Length: 118
Image (cartoon, rainbow, N blue to C red; front, side):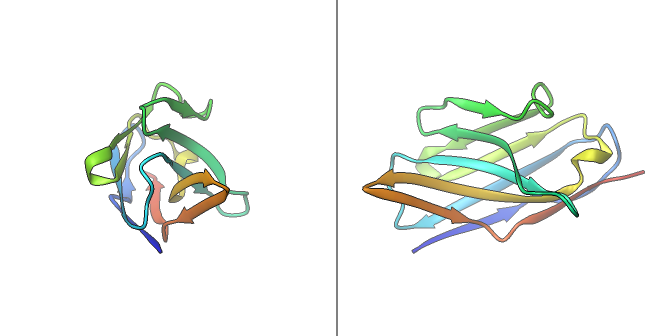
């Protein structure tokens, strides 16, 4: 079993910054992809950014240049540094870890609320 614990969400003014953390524990293989997704009210869940164990990153166009994903492989922890936040970034942010060995293994955190408002 795999557990993901997110932290770092909250309320921030437009233009502000937040840093999310996701700590993974349990039966995790070393070759995996960790990512952050978000879901705003009335919208589908969407990819924000993900990162491979080798450090290759992928970002949604809407956050490129403002958000930075990173990870500490020794700690099985991923981070999302969010700068220049906009009201449209308001959503529940979910951490994800996945890998494929014979089948896809796909795990989610409980989500953390990010609200950007003045």
